[in-house]
Image 1 (cartoon, rainbow, N blue to C red):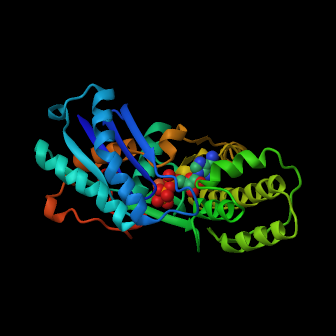
Image 2 (image 1 turned 45 degrees about the horizontal axis):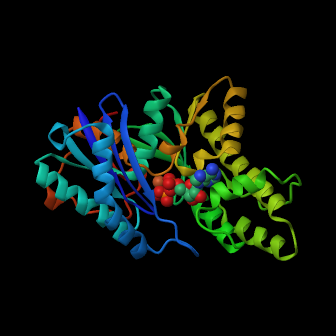
Length: 326
Ligand code: ATP
Ligand code: FE2
């Protein structure tokens, strides 16, 4: 079986082709990067409409797959920005109808989690899903993924992006802050906001910008933000492991590209006698391969839909979608 998956929930348009053994045959991605400020949903959607046909052609070409050889078309149904979701869903519906293939809706958050899980080889891990809009500690239980802890305000990636843009940088902020932090050494005091298994970042945003206004340098600010924010994530992941009596952690989402976060979680997990795993970076950030892979799981459980029941779901939470393949 071979599936084509389309991702378009936010800034990134991407098409992946994946086999039933989770081999990524091709991945064609194009990220919308505004010159100034954050993401405007309509501008991002226009970008996706423009690039998706070329990405589909490139993915098929690179995978040496003809449309007739595909078993289904999967797309990210939500959560995400409405106009962006509709751009990808429209392309997916058109392809499914033209090629006469099943259409498989996939939850974007579950897809981040499932691609990380299959690549880890760990059957039932604790998952730290850290991305732009979401920051969740997730474990499977009784038919769906359960959110054990999460951000009470913004996702960690959105926090990093907003901070970096407010300091004069451009989107995406996470990788830029990672590079800047390598030149920092002084740990400045910032709000450490952990509430049980939840976290919050808006206080840290305000405090960091206030320190910047008083003249603190970007490298030390970046160093301090990374150490504080990633310690918070490591702490709630450790608490979830302890409560669920687990040892193994799998990271997913764009912020899981971060080497400092990977290192902190690894040290914590290994200190408890367990392991941690993070996928290659191209499969941590938004990508069509994770949609195609989760499409395999969903299709195997009979979850394809007719076009008229394929409406996008901009607010579809991780813990609201059944995962009957587990
Ligand atoms: P969500 O999955 O919540 O819908 P998203 O789809 O917008 O979020 P992803 O592509 O999963 O986003 O993640 C993008 C985020 O990852 C951005 O906020 C970006 O700054 C952050 N990011 C990417 N690379 C790094 C890095 N090396 N360090 C920290 N953050 C990073
Ligand atoms: Fe994402």
